Length: 220
Image 1 (cartoon, rainbow, N blue to C red):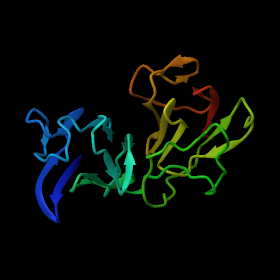
Image 2 (image 1 turned 30 degrees about the vertical axis):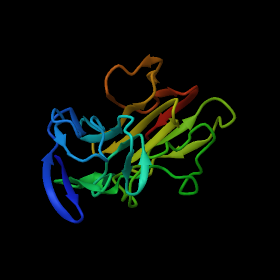
Image 3 (image 1 turned 60 degrees about the horizontal axis):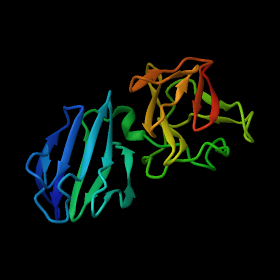
Image 4 (image 1 turned 135 degrees about the vertical axis):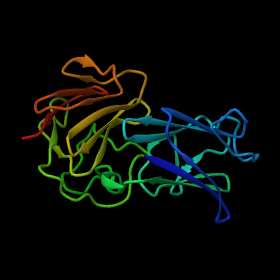
C-alpha cells in the first residue's frame, strides 16, 4: 500500500495513506489532501489507484505538478518519487517496494531500439534498472513503417503510444503482464475489443491496437 509524505523546507507536515480509488489534492478544504497555500490550486491534482498502481494527474493547475523536477500531466508514481507542488515536496513510498522500486519505461538506445510510432510518453518513467523476473516478453509492430520491429519489455513498466493522443502501459508482474489505458479519449483495443476495464491480463499472441499502430504481444 502506498503513502504520501508531505514536507515543506525539509519538515514533514503530514503523512497520508492511499486507500481510495481517487484521492484529490488541493487548497480547498473538501480535498482529501489539503495544502493551504496560494501556490496550490483549489483542485490541483488527483491520485488514481488502479490495482497496485498509483497515477497522479495534474488538473490544469496554475503552477503545475512536477515529479523529480520534471513537469507532468499524468504519470505513474514509483517508489521514492518526489512530487513537487510549489515549495511543497510529497514523497511517494510503497510499504513493500517489490517491483515498484524498479519501475522504468523502455528508453530508446537501451536494449531494443524503440521503433517509430511507439513513442515514449512524456513524463512517464522511473528510476533504476529492472532485474530479471523470469522470461522477457516483447511486442512486435504489425503495421506501418516499423512493421516487423520487436521491442523487448525489459522494464517493469513500458509505456507505448502517442502523448496527447493515446497512451497505454504494459506492467510486468510475477503473475504475468498487465495492459492498462493511461491517456486519450479513445480506448485501445485488444484482439479488436475496446479495453472497457482499467486493466487486462495479456496473453501470448494478443493483438493490441493503439494510436493507429497494431502490435502483437509475444510471451513464449
